[in-house]
Length: 434
Ligand code: CUA
Image (cartoon, rainbow, N blue to C red; front, side):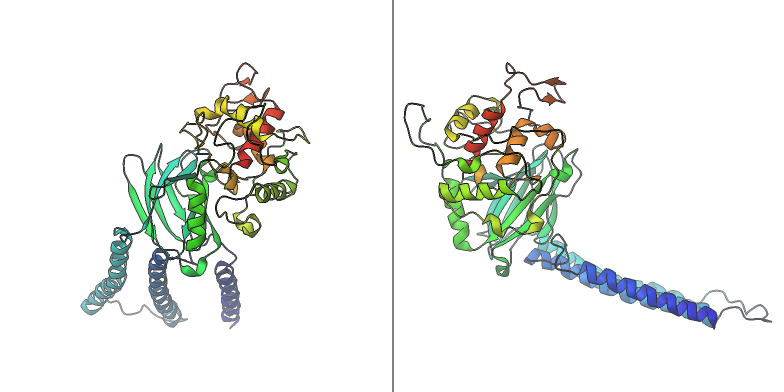
């Protein structure tokens, strides 16, 4: 009696624990859960998962039930002799061969069906996006529109998007948990994945990840997906197609030329204690004052889970209170190491292809492939010493007198080292590139 009491209590504990786990894992507050699909592809996979979970649960309950029944019903009793011995039962042998075979049919048929659906070519008329995985950032091209961006994609809801996946170096994996995925991004081979974002998820932000270990900053290889309405998408495309919004026509000379837009918003301060402090709002102010060429997802509407909270290296400092000048910043940018790796359409000096295209970098919500918010304070530290901000990043250390772990030396003025004022100017320039 005592034993069965304890067993009953244990069973009730286990039941409560299972309920808690189930409740926590089904919570919508888990934005990166694959169990809440928001696309056709996501639902195909979800259907398979639910089917397998159901069948697995039924088999588990039947098998464990039978096991527990037999253990208790035929347990050894006092004064009991040796039970009758049996060997072999054709009926049983056939039964336990056939039952798993039938179960496997119920698993295999929908699995093969889902494989065929998800591996099929995307429907004609799909939005094509060329994805290139780099150590450690994502390059996105919209060939239909001539738009190149990095680490952020805008998708119109209701239209199938076809991703063409390639790698510039090692194996990565493209994954947006709630929209469907994941698929490997491999050198020398083009993979595809497609899905149609549900129309119900217009005006939303989704986290994307690299899901294949690809080196020191694998965890810092993230991206954001913005699902927007068709009109917002067209407006965004129109803006991104244009050359850089700031200073695209002619280099600004000190004696005249176009008046630079107000850049007080790009003033560089030391990073705020909380990542969403003054720096963030000052950039929002700058974007409002500069006027937007195309739709940009409003910063204040970006949900908390899509805002990075990576810590800043404690030993990386920046002069407080510097105000950057975008015109000067453009000149510094165009004559420094930056142009060796970055392109800015409209700035003929900047045609590098190693790093992200910066034509509209000011319109992006994050820098460093989702590792930091795209705010002046972070951008300044990033330019000053990117290798401290993100392990093993290719971007060289640019801050004067900063130690570069690859060169194993401090950056000198002769080696292209930039002062904090010069960096503040570049930040003002980049921030103006909406
Ligand atoms: Cu790219 Cu992991």
